Amino acid sequence: MTATTATQQDAQGDDRYLVELEHVEKHFGNLHVLRDINLKVKKGEVLVIVGPSGSGKSTMCRTINRLETIDSGVIRIDGQPLPKEGRALAQLRAEVGMVFQSFNLFANKTILDNVTLAPIKVRHMDRTQAEREAMDLLARVGVDSQANKMPSQLSGGQQQRVAIARALAMHPKVMLFDEPTSALDPEMVNEVLDVMVELAHEGMTMLCVTHEMGFARKAADRIIFMADGQILERGTPDEFFEHPQTERAKDFLSKILTH
Amino acid sequence: MEGFISLFQQYNVPAAFLVNLELTFWSALFSAILGIVLVLMRISPIASMRHVAGGYVEFFKNMPLTIIMVFMVLGAFAQLKLSFSDNFETNFFWLAVVGLSLYTAAFVCESLRSGINTVPLGQAEAARAMGLNFMQSATLIIMPQALRGSVAPLGNTLIALLKNSTVAAAASVATETSSLMSEMIEFRPDVIIQIFLIFAFGYVILIIPIGLLTTFLSNKLAVRR
Image 1 (cartoon, rainbow over the protein chains, first blue to last red):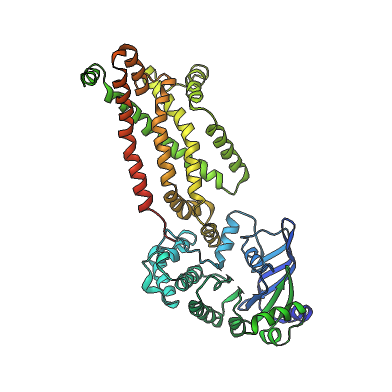
Image 2: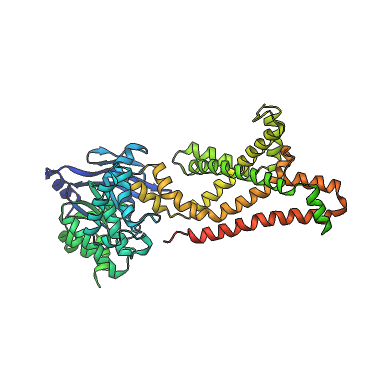
C-alpha cells in the first residue's frame, strides 16, 4: 500500500488518534535519523514498526515520550502536543507505558515495589490498593510467585513480563515496546510475545518496534517499514509481507524470511 | 619505652586525637550534605545548576587545603568578620570545620558521581518514562544504587579527611595532633623517634578500621544486575 491510501484509511476512522507525529525531524550530529516522519495511531490500534538496524525505528519510538528530543515537527498524544521538560511532561509520560529492550527494572527494588512505585509516587494511590493491583497484574503475566524477589533473581523473560506489568500499572493510554524481545534468550521470547498478543487482543493501543515477524503477522493491525530514517511502507501485515512495494522492503524481507 | 611513658604523662595525646576525630566527624557530616546537593546539581536537567556545581568542584578540588584553611582565618574571620563564637578555640574549631567541609564536599561529589556512573542509563530512563520527576528518580532509584557503588571512593575520601584534619593547625586549631606534635618536638628533642611513632601509629590505628569497613560494605551492598 502506498502512503496516500494509508492516509485515506486513517481519515475514514471515526476513532480519535492517540499518537500523532507530523513532519518530525531529528539529527544526531551529521546523521539524519528521522526524516519527515508522519504517523497517526488510532485508539486500540496495534502498530508494528520494522526495518533494518539503524533505520531510526527505536529513535522514533523513544521520541513519543520524549526520551529523545526532536529537532522540528509536532508529536501529539491524545490530541495534546508533547510538553517540554517539567511537570506536564512527567504527567504525560505517566500516560504512556514503555517497555525497553534491556527491561530496566529498578535494580534496588523488589518485583512488587517495581510495579507499585509509580502508582504510589506519581498517581498517589494508597499502598494497599497499589499492591493489590500489582499482584493482579503480576498474576496476569504469570510472575506473581516472584513478587518479593529482586529483579536480578529472575530470568530475562520473567523480567520483561514484570516490565510490562509495571507499565500497565499506570493504566497507560498507549504502550510503546522498544524491541522487547531482542535481549532475550530464544526460549524466552514466546512467553513475552504471548503477553503482548493478549494485550493486543484486549484492545490496548500499542506501538511495537520488533524483529519478530511472527508477532507482526499475528497481532499487528498495521505495519510500517522504516529505512534510513524514513517511513517507506505502510500497510496491513498481508499487504506488507505478500506484496512489498519498495526494493528496500523486498530486500529486507528476503533476508529475514528465507530461513 | 621510658620515653613513651614520659611523653604520655607529660602530654594528653588522646585528647589531641579526639580533636581530630571531632573535626573529621563534623566535616564528614557537612561535606556529605553539601556533596549530595552538589552531585544532584551536577546531574540535574538544568544547565546553569550543572555549571555552578561543576565550577565549585573544579575550584575546590584544585585548591590546596592549606590555602583554604589560612583563608578561613585571615580572610573569612579577620577580614569578613565571620565568627562562630567569642571563644577563640571554639571559633577556630568551627572555621576549620567549614574549610574542611567546603574542600571535602568537592571530593564527596566526585565520589558520588563515580557511583552514579555505575548506574545504567536505562534505570533513569525507566524512571522518567513512568512519570517520576527528577528528584523522585534521583532519590528513589539513582542515588540508592549510586551510594552502593560509591562506598569505596567515599571511604577513601573519609580517610583523606581524617588525615587532612591535621591541616586545621593552619586555621589556628592549636589542640589537634599536628600542633601537639610540633610542641612535643620542640620541648622533647630527646625522644624524636618515639614522638614520630606515636602519631604515625595513632593514625594507622584510626584509619585501618575505616578501610576494613568500606571493603566490607562495598561487598555487602554491591548491586546485583
